[in-house]
Length: 222
Image 1: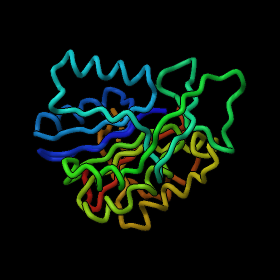
Image 2 (image 1 turned 180 degrees about the vertical axis):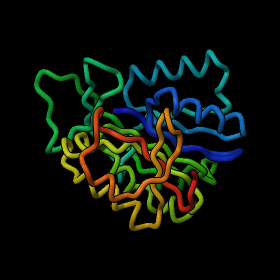
Image 3 (image 1 turned 90 degrees about the horizontal axis):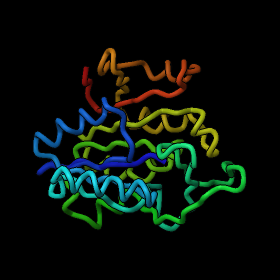
């Protein structure tokens, strides 16, 4: 499982874990502008790694690591720890049961709505990043109140149809979640930056590597 983050002005940001270089640069700009980041990381080894990085760089007052996973509600869930890579751990569902033997961790989970409600320092929310290896729809369902309360918040989410389907979700449901709420879709790429796209394009098969970084906003960003 990758992670989840919220950015809030001081400002605040909530972010879901591992990012490639393009996303790291985007977050660095927000930190430079005075945002605070709440980064959710449920996996024990990754959690220790990120805590050490933040400590070495003196960012404790800018980035808060939350040792939890995000979902539509609260509770404890089983997290499959991919032995081949730190960036592809996944929440176990009825549809997704990896081959045995597989290392599994029991991780606490909460919704973004509940986290924001119980942590007033995480408001107002300016940016939410979700990258959770196929569990994106469940995370989005758990932030409906937050989006209503923060209509100017921008949401970055990885669209990974194969990952969504492997966990038992309908890939189109995540797209519909934002379309039905009046959000505009943008593609984020290293070559062309941020480009607005027609959501209907996303219903076609994605070219390799099979996923796309999307940014949703109620106004055009490009």
